[in-house]
Length: 188
Ligand code: GLN
Image 1: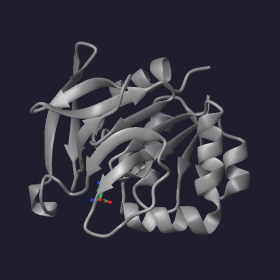
Image 2: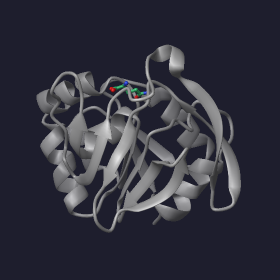
Image 3: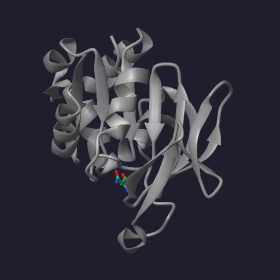
């Protein structure tokens, strides 16, 4: 599948590299024309306020919501998770795409100094991830499935074609998580 990585701000280059290592055909998405050619989309980590402003400016906010509503698979990680949520706790108000019924709190683990690396388990296999000024999912709506929890907090949730993680797998070598994506989210 041709997968797009939203490349307005944040660690899109690392996602592109990780997706390519796992065998995906990858395209960086900076405008509405780029979006047309992709079948799935990654919204990377970064600074959610900045990405939100750039989404609006480029018109990609509406275009992405339209594609998601038509069934495009999307994975939001960290800032990307915040941008997909419909209820965000944040010091400064932020406009999001509001496509997933979750509550999420920005920078909920503390400052940059409280960022950390840990091992998580998905479908019986362990893999290493990083939490970087990560948000916490504080509430999940009906029918949303928690696929991974960390210290009793959901850190990976899914509803149909929408997947959200609060951690970064792309910063650590290994393709396990991306291979999982190919089987479960970005297939076809
Ligand atoms: N703290 C960032 C925000 O709230 C998210 C951090 C990240 O994407 N790693 O926008």
